[in-house]
Image (cartoon, rainbow, N blue to C red; front, side, top):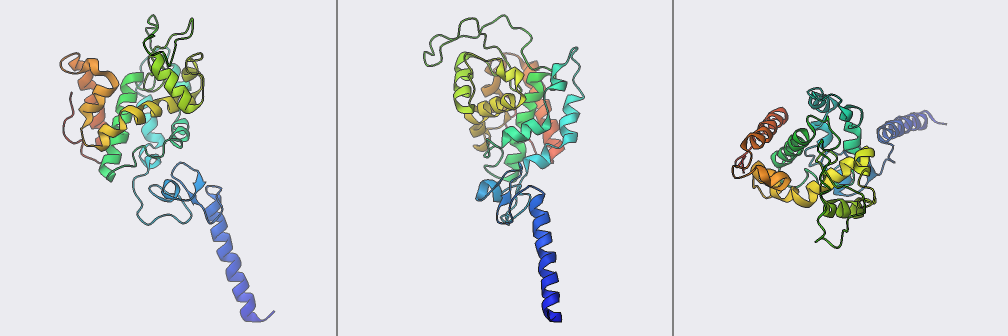
Length: 266
C-alpha cells in the first residue's frame, strides 16, 4: 500500500472512531440524533432543542434535562420533612426524564424563557403537591372522588380516585382518561399511579399537557396554572397555599436564571 494511501486509511479510521464514539454516547447510529431524553431518531423532536449528539439542528434551545439536574432534583427532595416519607425511595430524576420522552412538547413551545418558566411552574406544583417529593398518595384517603356523571369513565367498585403521583391525580375521569392515553387501567387499577414511578410521572405530565401547558405558552402567567391545578386556592379561597406555590415558582425561576413574569397569583 502506498504511503499516501496508508495515511488516508489511518485518518478514515480515526474519523470513524470519533463518529462511533459520539454515537455510542446515546447508542444511536451516526445518521440519527440523540434527543435530550436519550432517544434516537430524526426530526425536531430528536435533532432540535437539547439534542445531545448526531446531526443536531443548529438552533439549539433549552434542554429540560440540563435544567432538571440531579442536584436540582435532590435539592427538592432533601427538604422533605414527612415521617415516613415514601417518596424518597420512589421518585427519581431518571423516571421523570424517561416519562418526558412521551411528551416531547413539554417546555418546548415558545421562547427559551417560556420553556424555563414552564419547567419552574411544573416543579413548583409538584413540590407543593407532594411536600417536596415526600408523598406519593394523598394523606386523606376517605374520599372516593367518584363523579358518576362521567359515564365514559365509570367508577370501579371499591376503588378510590384520591390524589396520587407528582401532581396528585384525582377523580375517576382523570384516571380513566390518563389510563387510556398512557396505557394502564386507570379505573380498575388507580393504585398503579402510586406503584409504578414511570406511570406516576407520565400521569402528571399527561395532566399537565392536557390542562396546563397551553396557559403557559399563551403567556397567561403562573396564576393561571394554579387555577388549573387547584382552583379552590384562587380568589381568596386559600391565599396561604396559593402564595406558597408562587414562592416556589419564583425560587425555581431564579435557579433557572429567568424572570417569573407577570400575573403570578389567581
